[in-house]
Image 1 (cartoon, rainbow, N blue to C red):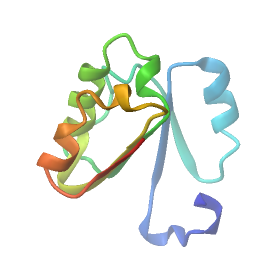
Image 2 (image 1 turned 45 degrees about the horizontal axis):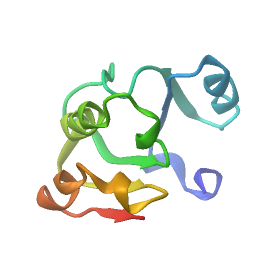
Image 3 (image 1 turned 45 degrees about the vertical axis):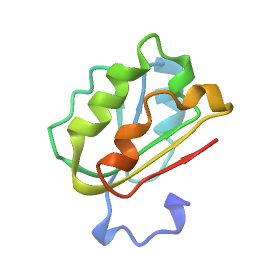
Length: 106
């Protein structure tokens, strides 16, 4: 999808904890890749218009900490989306709806 967008008005930052996955992500044209822990993002507060956490929260030791970090780096009224594989993984997603437009797909 990123390859089809007009990039003059968009920036893409991809993050992952795995060095191997970060290596693969570096093949995405014009994307910034940051190796980091989702619970401790080395990114500025209110610096992103959208955060997408797709099928990853259930891999974390502390998904609530990651959700707090996502909220911290999002600008007010920003977009947010998280995908998970099962309804029991929805725990903690209330911030997405309570803080503005967002979607959780399970």
